[in-house]
Length: 194
Image (cartoon, rainbow, N blue to C red; front, side, top):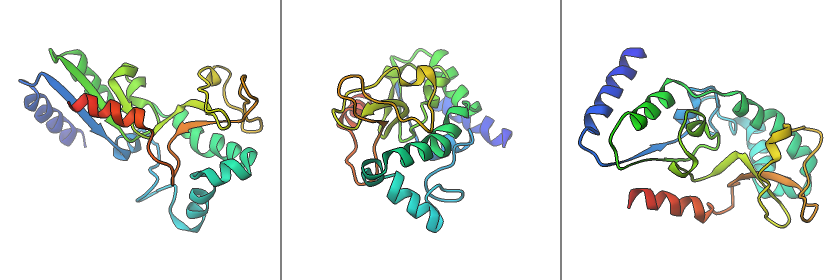
């Protein structure tokens, strides 16, 4: 794997040598190498009958609305926990080194991943368009207000945080299945490639 990675990075460096603006598109494969299981495919979270039930209940607004405490607990233990424990792998590091050690006018990421590992490797927030949101960000299910300091005290699977403004329950600021992708992220991604 090291030889393949090395030759791939060499080609990437050579291919961007004369570039002024670089946009990197990433998806589940990038996170899988950090130990984050994908939703689909081998080891996918939504595989099998239990995976399909988990998708229906925790991956759509249905479960968050009807059984918010149950879904919150499952989210913290089964989804957020492994992502919070994940660390950037050499691919993240190599991309960030390419970003930092180049003369590009701009370097940006458009990612389908919700783990914020690009930022953990050193990318600035304004360089990353998280098309499906991030489990590192939260919002109120009732008034939709952002809840920026939620991770300061850690997440308790038995106690779903409440909004300071309206008392509504928190949920991760990610796109659930059956819900349209948040326009902010899509627009930011379009800006990067313009």
